[in-house]
Amino acid sequence: MAAGPAPEARPLMDEQTFLDNFSHLNYLHETYLCYEVESMNDDLWIPMDEYKGFLRNKSSYRRWERRHAEPIFLERMASWNLDTELRYRITVFISWSPCPDCADELVKFLRENRHVNLRIFAARIYDWYQGYEAGLRELNAAGAEVAMMTLHEFEYCWKNFVDHQQDEDKPFPPWDNLVVRSEELSQRLEGILQNREE
Image (cartoon, rainbow, N blue to C red; front, side, top):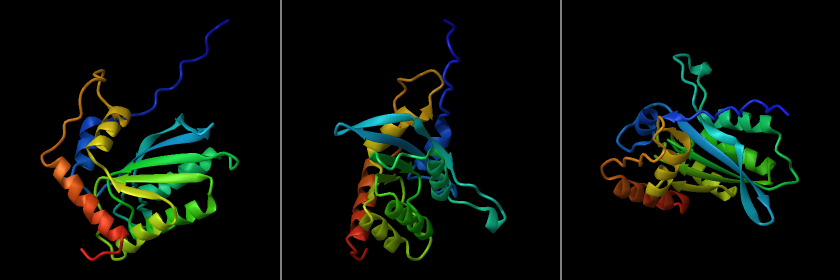
């Protein structure tokens, strides 16, 4: 019996792209989103590797052609036709927290897809638009777990979403003050979610 074709390798992010876009030291106008899906089976979350990857926003000098990463991700998820009879947990690691409009889209998705749990870990808070705080609170109230990335999440992404050019054991190179900055952002997010003044 002949063997079938080898499974197609899942694309991985370039190391420098990850470091440039997820670092607290850089403020690039791009958003990268890494995602993974798990399904519930006998009270255990089982990874679904066919639904694991990353994407980025679509930038353009034409405003009407720009697209944030979250709507692109929601379209990708819709194409998967996840079984509504099963439970799913979707974990997203994103370089910027959702803007107010994207938070609204994610809230709508969660309300229409009660079989999905959403966890969002953001590297930075997207605070360029008025209403970002309310958007994050609404997302949290809709059942999404919203948190800042800590060293643990950065290391996890480095191991699972970044191409190390044949050196799979290459450790994540944390930048200066990563732990301190993550803690500051976590406290800031906690204040936003609890509706406290900054």
